[in-house]
Length: 220
Image 1 (cartoon, rainbow, N blue to C red):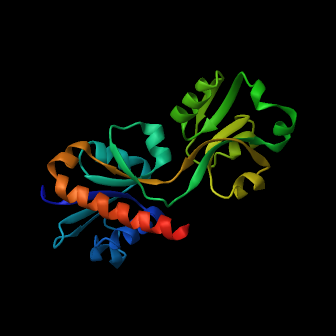
Image 2: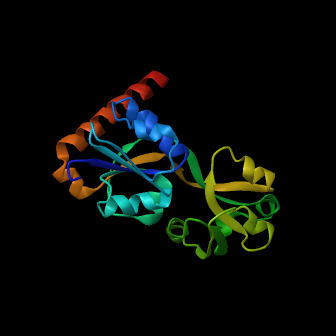
Image 3: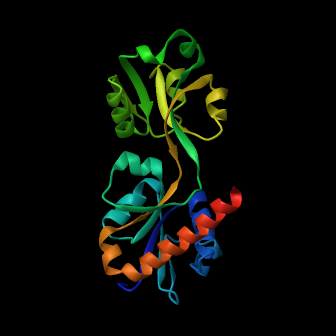
């Protein structure tokens, strides 16, 4: 299988969006269109393999060389800090990583006066770095789902989480305080693969860059 290019893709919407984008540069996998529950798919004619993994596991599969190329959100890359090549912003999956708190608390306090706070988040590393840069001590509580629940039950005063429209925050009586980063989906590449399969991988990157560039120009 050394002559195959292997892609690690997150299950769900990002995988669907990725394959739609890849199809525009001739990268397809008919086997994936059958609705199969398989985790590994192949296109023997084109020598492409696709593995379906959890989004948070994509960088690990790419870093260790089990996959040559991966697609993953910038939030995951920021949190994990893996040794990877990140050549392209794929321009989809846009959201923001924000600090948020209950509306009542926002009316009482000025974030400029924060010195020691408790924050619930899926992103402890990013959160700690962000507040350390501002000279704020933070007690971190790592959660894996429904981050907005933490302030409602007194687990933490504030959260750091991803928001798209902000509707979930509003429905739970919370407001955004600060934006840490704007997040989109990124293409990542194993550093060794970029050397050993340089021609094929570089062609994929250049073709995607062309497609994305054309879309950006047309949208202006």
